[in-house]
Length: 470
Ligand code: 5AD
Ligand code: SF4
Image (cartoon, rainbow, N blue to C red):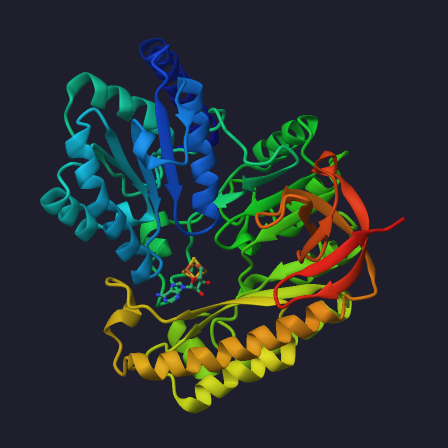
């Protein structure tokens, strides 16, 4: 489809859904209906949930955190590891009784887990009480699916197996007034052999730079000062656009937007991280000095089996290059332990990388077999007790190192964006440094959303404690 045609289809779709939103709004007016939305998984899902929330609030539904008082319950699901799926099935089991008590309750499931045939078969067989099921490609159709459900009283399953178009300009409900996530691309082409994401989120598709810039300009006009650019692999942004452009070039354009103070992005694949990107990052004060750079395994042999396209040495070299260009940068990462065939030496390579690079924090995972991925049928699956023991050793190293990095901040004065009232203590606000570290400090709620200078007085294992600088 030509670019023009895509834009037309997208505009018509947005118009149609907005019209349905208005019809539904009339229908539920005055009924005081509530929705409860639970989000599982990554930032992509969190962002999708903001769109879902935006559409439902526009219809007139009111959000509640309590499923017992909800008229509409939605789960935005994740399937990246088996545990995530088990959690959903567990929660669904509990919903069955609620539906029996209140037949008017509507239950909807969406997100990555729904893109698997085996899940849909299970739901059809054992969870017939689920009213609406949709996937990752047609979230924008929620108003229409809801309308059909209300009119026909029939269960609806609408799963697509690829994107048709990227629909812009639908309602949106952001969690924060002053910071926002912006999708720059969808899907992934990398097919790491352990990962289900390419199968459930489809091929890579970049949004037009002009749409992204326009969205951010609107956000800034609305009071947003920090944005997080989201993509499964932001470093390959723009490769499939009609007029290709690099992620670094996009960042440069975004950094020119006046009023924007902080730019973050995730996730970066090491194989695609260019010198141009390092240069652009280093030369812009607006681009935060924090980088999430998953290495998954430190063993070149395992990396090859994972289809990651880099080696232990080339990753270490890249990390060195980044730190030379930006000495204060905080690196974070994802690591998988117990990939099929992982030997003790392979695991030691992983520990080496952690020791050598130094991460402010790391997400560590035990390998989880995902049916349909190449790694699921590889020989030498690692016994759980071996993976678990390695996992614990890795976690200990990661935690100790993270705490040391945090300790290095004590005595420094840093700029912090104050983001929320601390859950444990209402007199304390939590915020983040440019390097992405969490800081707690006593401060008044009026300062939420503001940038303040903070003296760091103490470090804990996962956060810093500070005081407002005089
Ligand atoms: N098992 C364990 N961890 C996984 N991840 C992705 N797939 C799997 C799997 N099958 C992890 C990777 C990725 C993060 C989002 O989830 O580390 O970077
Ligand atoms: Fe999964 Fe690899 Fe794509 Fe990340 S880059 S989403 S780990 S396939």
